[in-house]
Image (cartoon, rainbow, N blue to C red):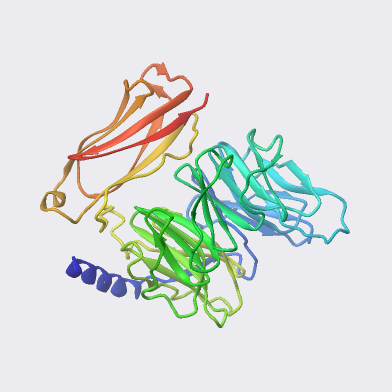
Length: 425
């Protein structure tokens, strides 16, 4: 195992010399977020008039951009996608001198036209899409909508008003600024305390393969169950504050600042055991912030204070063959969930381990109803090691499935894992 990891790391270091960031548009503009709606990448750009934000989109990885629509409001800071809707928020704190103004907006036509979803005097932030819900933070409370922004309610059972929420594998997580982490299995109605000793303040939480990863003031930490946490800072610069984490089953990216407020982007392909700096070519100013990271195919995109940047990471991992170095099988939560009319399921077959794993293995991915009846067979063939994605549609043959709970199961040899999904018609 040590030999495999060493070879992998040497290969990454060699390849990273040939991979560089490039700014693809909007130099000197502050881009606070980047969203993905189907195949369309979307960014907000503050217009020449202070009170306006224009939205731009690209379907060719940022080689060209088209103007989509605009909102007569500045400082649009983030996107979230729920079903066919795009939500964005206005983080505009006006210190009590402004009359109530729209602060959450909703679009049904890919950002061309916008409706006001919520009006609140001081703006909103931390939009979060979760199981067809949409959540937002108002500075002193959290609100949520179950009807795509038509109405909003205050969360009454949130663990704290000082913290952040995350949606992972159909579960809600809440991390307080006092380093506690909670989890909810019922969309925020009830919460269970997992741990009260996260290493320092936490700003980002993701799941990658079997681990939860948290980024914060002490770098990067990981946990198998959210209860016990360990720092995994090998290769992370000293005094590095990790603000954003994102990843695919075969790779993790993290960005943040060192003590001189210089931004870096780090990468790991071995579940956080080691990290390398992949900031070559990212020539922003010392105090220019990275606000958001997003992965599309083999590109990593960064929304920054100095435009939109792009990094082709295909040289770091064999994306074309989707061969990854992992010891675990992985079955993702379907997305979106609930869904209508279709959803996507990702799964991973390991490439190292027993000798059998080095050859194609017989893979079955099936869908069942709540009674255990087989509904559909999505995969039933030999597959080499790699990461795959399949689509499941609510119409199976000539039959339209009814709303309700369904289960999908991945079976490879003696391995079997089952997860739940919900169809809403």
